[in-house]
Every structure is written in C-alpha cells, then in structure tokens.
Length: 101
Image (cartoon, rainbow, N blue to C red; front, side, top):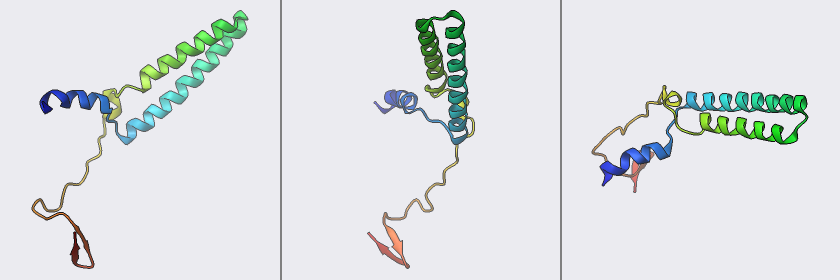
C-alpha cells in the first residue's frame, strides 16, 4: 500500500527548497505587480471596470498556476540533512553525560 501512496504523497506535500521558496516569492510579487498594472492600464484605456476586474483575475490565476504547484524548478537545490550519529543508539537525551529517557 505504501508503494501506491508514496508518489501521491510526494505530489501533495509539495517539497521545495529554500532557493525555490525565494524564487516563488519573487515570481509571485513580480507577476502580481505586472498583472495589476496591466489591468489598471487596460481598464483606463477602455474605461471598463469589468474588463479591469477580469484582467486582474486572469493575472492572479496565472500567478497561482505558476507559483502554487511544486514545479521541479523549485527543488533544484535540496538541503542535505544530517543523519543519525549512531544507528544503534537507544532513544533518549544525554544531559551532562547522563542519559535521560
């Protein structure tokens, strides 16, 4: 059962690295500013508030499509985490040389 659920879980979890987070934040800011400015200009030129709102909504949905899914470009530099120091060590915490359970 785990073999079936593991790929689905990987897609749902959306693993991205720290550089990917920075890129996603930058992309969302830039795309929302561009879509907001474009919708303002389009609405001003055509003098139509509905067109302004639809253009802004389209830009927001495009931004969400670019930023929200865990695209592979957001996980190019995964962090290498440290493993356990001893695989056979019993669980517990050592305080001043005394193991506490």
